Image 1 (cartoon, helix red, strand yellow):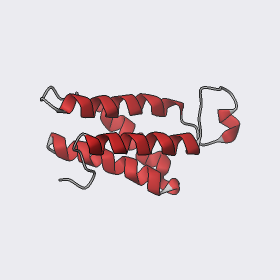
Image 2: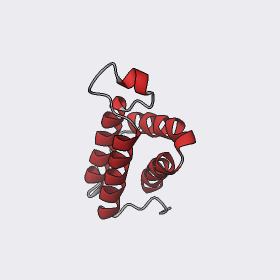
Image 3: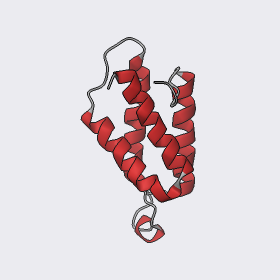
Length: 103
């Protein structure tokens, strides 16, 4: 898979997590696993895209869908904050020229 296709696929996973709460956990795990396993690009213009992806992946470590587990730490957040983060990341990726539908 070429890098731009990979980056677009990652953005699609974020869209899926935003759109489909039933598949949210699976989409977010796939996103985080792929980001963690992919060396960031050194190509001009892609550093900013990968910064957004890397930063979001780190932020997702604090997402907890279960309110009972979330109560264990103020660092954890739920679905409302998650959706804000996903929308912000997708908007930033779009601003940087990456569209989830690009192939």
